[in-house]
Amino acid sequence: MKIGLASDHRGYRAKNFLKDSLYDYEVIDYGTDSEDSVDFPVYAKKLGTAIKRGEVDLGVAICGTGIGMSIALNKMKGVYCAKVSTVSEAMLCKSHNDANVIAVSEDLNEDLMLEIAHKFIETPFSNINKYIRRNDMIKEIEND
Image (cartoon, rainbow, N blue to C red):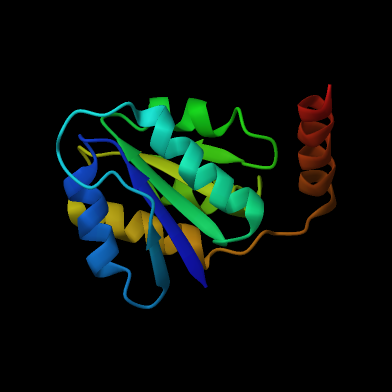
């Protein structure tokens, strides 16, 4: 499984931690490459484009709060990003909403961030009819 990572300058250290820790997966780093100030939408777009093109299966985006990355990623058709702060949210966004990206705050404890990433990656979509129906409704909104 291929996992894409992206961050702005505030998430740079956390991104590198995940890159070094997710050794069970092929990890592709979409930047940034330093702690120099950058605009997070640039890196959100790089990750989102990789998701859309099928270059990676799932993504993790990191910025100061995770909110900005989530907003930017959710502007892209076919990219479904959940801003998560807990392991439960990571599991539910995948099993119920079939999210293909999570956004997290760089302020999360490293152990928690790694557990969140693993649970997100490992949790399958539930394929329960009500979730399929709701996700299809989201896709209809996306096409309006």
